Image (cartoon, rainbow, N blue to C red; front, side):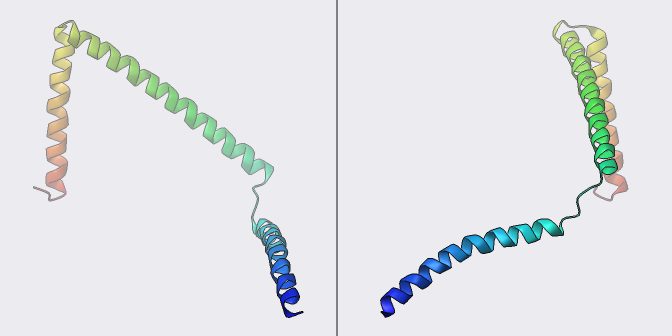
Length: 104
């Protein structure tokens, strides 16, 4: 008889665990502060604008670097000069910023 009771208790615990999980999930979902319709629309618009702007920026950078690399590969002096100027300015900016932070 004691064994039958123990089996019934194990079976009840398994069922209770699932039911408890569902109840806990429902109670947690009730605690969530869901955004209003206006907030959802505003945030969706913001995401779309940022996505379009970043897409245009990345497209422009791709076109610029493609032109730049094409000029370097065809030995265009303007492209090669632009690379040199960019490297010099980049290194100078790096050194100046590091000195201001006290790194050097």
